[in-house]
Image (cartoon, rainbow, N blue to C red; front, side):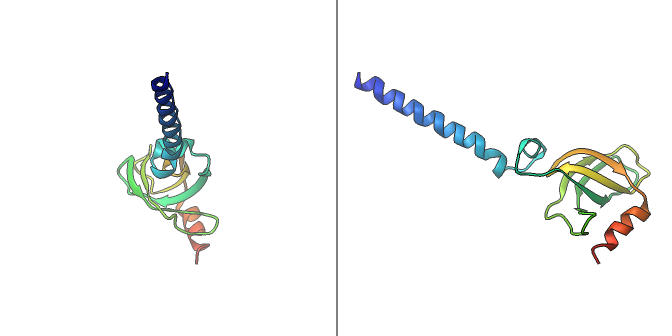
Length: 116
């Protein structure tokens, strides 16, 4: 009888530990999947300048168009759809990119000027 009691105690500890680890993983690892479901990360729109002649943008440094401050991280991957455009507005939640919109150079530079 005592042996069964110890086994159930160990099982409870393992289950509680597994639940705690699963709840903590999104706060430790930042990628598009974990950021998408992390309730502590807010969705925001940022502006960025991207290279032309490609539809895949890697390591994108963006800034907040309201105050002009750079984000403290680079967005690892942003998919585009127009290789001729250079300025984008990114609707994202951390590394998770919901959508992008191409913006004019005038709008981009106006937002960048707000920082100065």
